[in-house]
Amino acid sequence: MSMNYAFGFSLFLLVLVGLNIYFFYTLNTKAIKPSTFNVPSLKLDLTTSVFKDIYEYLNYLPSQYRVKNQKFIPIQKNLLSSFHTNSTTDSKRIWEEAETWSSEESLFPHKNGASGQILRAIQSSQIALVDNAPKGTQLKLLLVLEGNKKLYFKPKRYQLEHVINGNIYAGFDRHNSEVFAYYLAMVLNYKWIPPSTIRRIHIDKDIIPSATLGLRKTMIKNESGSLCIYGKCLYCKMNETICPDKNGEIEGAAILYLNKQFRTHKSPWRRSYTHKKMEWEIDNDFCKKVSGSLSTKRLLNLIDVAIFDFLIQNGDRHRYEVYKDQIVLLDNGKGLGNPLVDELDILAPLYQCCIVSSSTWQNLELLSGGSLSETIKLLSAFQGSKLATEDHYKAVERRLMKIYATVQYCIGKYGSAKVFKNGEY
Ligand SMILES: *[C@@H]1O[C@H](CO)[C@@H](O)[C@H](O)[C@H]1NC(C)=O
Ligand SMILES: *[C@@H]1O[C@H](CO)[C@@H](O)[C@H](O)[C@H]1NC(C)=O
Image (tube, rainbow, N blue to C red; front, side, top):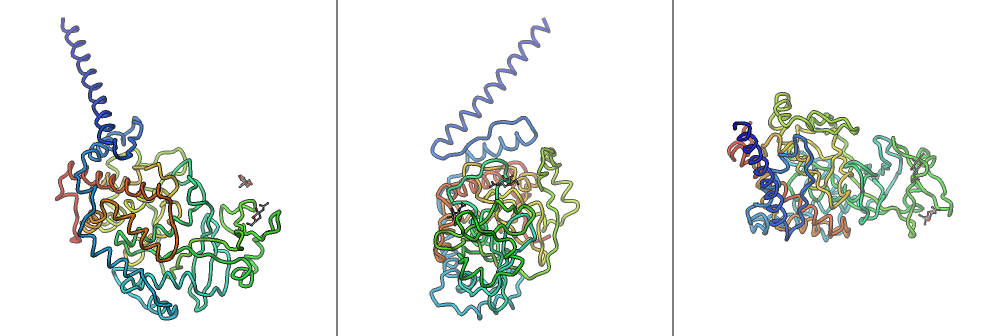
């Protein structure tokens, strides 16, 4: 009798669970229809339930997150004016201003057209010396400009349409990701990032006359007689060269070199780069362990960086540099790999700690309804570059919704009083 009863009850439970799963899927697919959210296939591990919860919030996201926020209009206007320069810029003056700039709010001057002037100077200053920049895993050059300003030059490896498959850190750096990241950071009001823009340098006019001996030694003629560079770096190979295009030019991201002392730290949420799982991947209480050894300020800063990295899908920030107690966003070339993939675990610092700085949240709320990608397009247009395909812009908007949903998930779990942190720590 009681066995029968237990059996019946188990059956009932089983049906209940089945129905739950069924409804979860139908809810997802129904609410998803107009947009393009892909629910990740359910894997049986600890993060599954968190992801599931976040996706539930995504499907019931308040409608304000799907439309433009009117409060952003004046802010966008200011941003545009900081990048819009019509004057033929006197590079010397803007370099001087950048050199002497000292602020707790930003790495560089950015008001009244200063951002645009710096980018213009990066793009057009005469090159005095070209060398390999051997630090790091990827081919990059060091350009010394007249007046002794230095740039890193990360050459273009892929067409904008190229999709990187494989793991989150696969492939070469994407030069457009570096530049996209700069604009993204500026739109998010995150001012701790070196200015970066697309620049084209000519093999015969810019490189050969100014190349160091060291650089010349890492150049070879390819089979059609073009001079190509294989460079000097951890992963540099003689068969993986950079060659000029039919105009003799090499395109790349020109990134202002920061002549500053950084402190480097390992990211608590770094990946293992093997099949081994890191602690944060198996322990959803991981944040408790971390918060014991990091200040709230640093933790909030790491969460800001996670949000930023999630938007471009950079899963390669295994370490980070700090200047004036702020994380500086260096090395952003591993973004924009695959516009169809959103690795939610890049947001682990956010959904595991469930805190976010109030000002970050306010900025994110301003950017709803397409303003984020629109502004990046408008700003980059001043420098005349296309930085990403439409698919990538769509992906960034879709990921912004997932960030909103993750914060809603946190609010649902702990209440907004616990989630939003002011600068009172
Ligand atoms: C270059 O050679 C290495 C082996 O030394 C190989 O693994 C790699 O796939 C080659 N790259 C290209 C683009 O052929
Ligand atoms: C050599 O480089 C030129 C210039 O980039 C390119 O057009 C050509 O296809 C290359 N040839 C070979 C065999 O790789």
